[in-house]
Structure formats: C-alpha cells, structure tokens
Image (cartoon, rainbow, N blue to C red; front, side):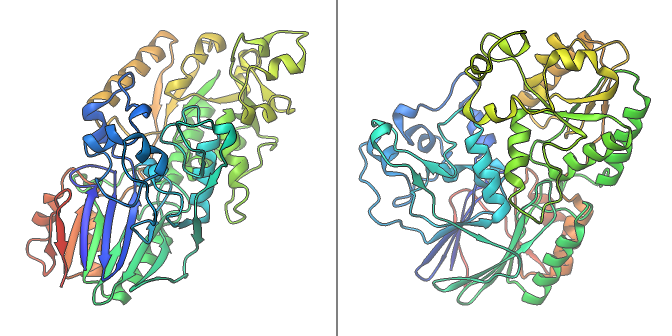
Length: 482
C-alpha cells in the first residue's frame, strides 16, 4: 500500500492524497492549491486555456499523471487521450475549493464520490459562475471545438451519507459526517487490504454540530487506524475563538445598537453563518438582503431536505439586484424584457420577485435592512450611500497572506471613506491546537501524517513523548506502508 501527497503539504488546502492498494487507485480530495498558484499567477496573469493543462502542470498545480485528465485539454497539448481512466475514483470531503475544485480537469468517466450536499454546492458554483475555465465541476462541453455541435458531459457522481460503506477493489471507504464551516462535510475511515487509515478532511469541535465530529472520533477509535491523516490549519493557535452562537449574539448586539444601515460580509457557503445572520436580523426586526448568487445557492440547497435553511421568498429575506449593463434596473418605465437582457440567465428568475430590491430601495430603507456586502460588492456603496451611523460587520478570518492583506486594507479604505466602523465576529471552521492534539491522542494511530498546515513540525514537537509516530510528508514522495 502506498500514499502520495500531491497537495496539502506545508500549505493550507490543495489536498490531493493518492492511495494505491494492490490494484486499487483512489484520490482523497482533489483541491486547488491557492498557495502554489499564487507563486506564479495573479488576477491579471492567469493560466492560458489555449495551453490546456500545460500551465498547471508546468508549476505543479496539477500532478503529472497519465490516464486521469480530460481529453480536450490533453489534445490541446498534443498528448494522447485517456482511453480508460487510470484511477478508480475520487472521494471529496467537502465542496470548498481547496478540496474539490480541480475535479474540473478530470476525465468525465472517473467516478466522483461525495456527499449529496457537496454535489449541490458544486452544481450551484458552476451554474452561477462568471468564469468558465477550471470551473466545470458538474458538467462540461469540450473546449477548442464548436460547442454547439458537441454534447454536454455530466460527471460520474456517486453520493453518500454517513453509514454507507463503499467497496472499491481491495478497499472499503466509510464516510462519516464531521462539523466544518460548510454542510455536507465528511471524514473517512479507509480499510485497505492490510492497513486501516483515518482521514479527517477539515473539522472542528466547537461548531453548532460538534457532535458529528465526535461521531467520527468514536468511529476512528473503534477502527484502530494504523495511520491518521489529520488537518492542522490552526495547530499554531492556542485560542479556540468564538463559537457560532457567540457570533450570532455579537451580530445581534451590533444590529440592535446601529441606528442606520448595517452591512455584513460572511462566507458565502457557510450555511451556519447564514443562519446566524438570518436569525439575528429576524430577532432585531430587520430584513437580510442577500445577493443573487446567494439566492441561487440557497434555492439549490433546498433540494437537501436535511438542511434547515429558509426559502428565498421568506418574509425576512430581500434579494439585492446589482446594476448590470446600462443599469436599467434602476430606471422607471423600462420594459421587463429590456432589464432581463442585462443579466445572466441564472439571475433572471430573481428580478421580478416581490422581495427583489435595488440600491434605491436600500437607500430609502436603511433603518430596517441588513445588506450583504463582500469585497467585490464594495462598489455598491457608491450607489447605496450609507448614512452616518451605519456599520460594517466583518465575519471572516484575518487575512492569511500578503495578497489577502492588500485586499483587506483596500476594504478598510472603502469603509473609512464611507464612515463605516467595522466590527469583527467570526467563528473558525477549523480546530485549534488543543483540540487537534486531543483528537490525535484519543484516536491513537500508530502513525500520524499532518497536512493542510503551514506548521506540520508542531505535531512532531507536541506528540514527541507519545507513542504516536509523526511522519511529515513531502510533495510527490511515495510513502510505502507495510
């Protein structure tokens, strides 16, 4: 049995774990490596679609492997097409980009195993995306040809729930739900021919569904894994930080104290955070105004009956329609057909809902609206013109690299210009040091492999006097397990 780590090594995200057990070959996660990509590309220096996968392979953003990639991108590089895929499947822990988005480059016949909610997230992300290259998660048409004449391929998805047992060749994979900042998140127990592996994916023990994380820990203890592959995003942080209920309470207090408009920024895919803001608005008698992309996502997620989320037509929700094209949404006596021409197909359904609003409505109703406004929505402040006494609630983590720091400072410049004091209220989706070490000591694997962290050596130091052997992986290095 062999393990190869093509991502998630000395970086946060980009997980690509390749497992070979006898003749069975599986990937666990196939995420986009932001840290590697940022070394070579930026907003205005992007990989070229004309070179297929070439630019990604050149810099190790994708692993150099035969028999796994799309034929159209291979053909553009003058490489032979994939006749039969060389791997048996890809298991996705969740739908965050750093764990799942590079499936867009995989061959259509490779089975993708994931939770039902994960599939819905990927579907919504693709359908409401403005950029197509590298975001064909759910379906795709071949590139470099007349697409009108080509069929649309649907990826080979297989969805699972906790308790399922997926037998593939010599391995059996057991997915177990786990708490994180996105629903549909799973950890895995992997039974190979002579080795048992537990893979955490991303997890936390302080979230609103922490019992799910304990479910995984208990299953892992029962499985007595030889290897524990554990995420370590916050292994360098001692403080647990706020819990989700504390975020909601702080948000509610800020809204109650604010006399004018409240603007908010929180992770788009964090349903727990959305519900915190929704409940805080409801209890303070304000309406939460969301973007069309959020509305589209919520509408898609309603297909999962186990998710407790409101309908987009809920009386406490408004849908903010940004100006597009010539901005006809804000003009009087304009035909509906003319307005619709300025929006994407997926957005048009929201334009004429009774709870749809534009900047004029927000400007006139500042005392009873909470408006979602992330970094890319800051432009809307010019039209909305928040009154003196308005506030901005920032519900995300601190910037983690130089580029994010630059954007964060730009955001602060906008807030200062519009006299918007900022309040931060955030709960992390990852476990801190104390919880990570607790998980390791309770599960008691023979070998622990830390990934998804910039400080993997801390596991070695903190577990130095335990009976757990810590193995620090290297990118592309084959780890033989006997």
